[in-house]
Length: 244
Image 1 (tube, rainbow, N blue to C red):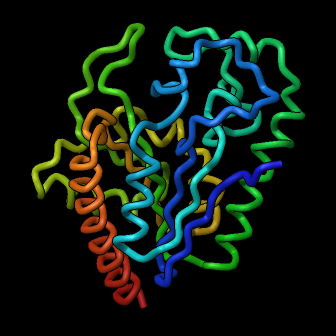
Image 2 (cartoon, rainbow, N blue to C red):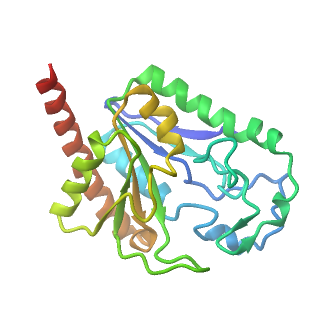
């Protein structure tokens, strides 16, 4: 069985990068019943996040964990009981191979090992900040409206890093969504479980995927997010010092 994630190592241990939707891979023994070209769409993978996460990890010299299976097989960024965990339809596209499916078997094969890996890594590394890298489509194919944000910062209850991140990005001219294009209070499963539950500051960073379409876009956002990460490092350290 293939590993649930790829781990990139880095010498700086205070930050951990996560990328739940890095891959569009579908194991050979799973037939989704869809056209192959759907695997290149946002329904199968967070477009641009694999190269962005790799570039950011290298720039910051920090570890990163990148998932190795498509969200059409199982969405690792959902709770095990979430209705969309194993999607039967995504943005209007039917996924007939997921209806019916052995839900428990697929959780045991992909979801549970991935989250065990994250839990072990976080216990061992003890990062002071977790950044989860995602991307969003400019407009859903079915029933969507244009999304004007270039980047969104998603968070749930713990806003220690989020408010500073929004301020940083807006101050540099980025059109930044505050819990947009969707709310981290509703969709924040990985960070709820591995960051917030452990008292670790975190944010999910959603970059609009048309801005990650080529190498220059990856470079621009890698540079911008490295600046953000360093700013958050400093602000969280200052806040921790003032609290003591």
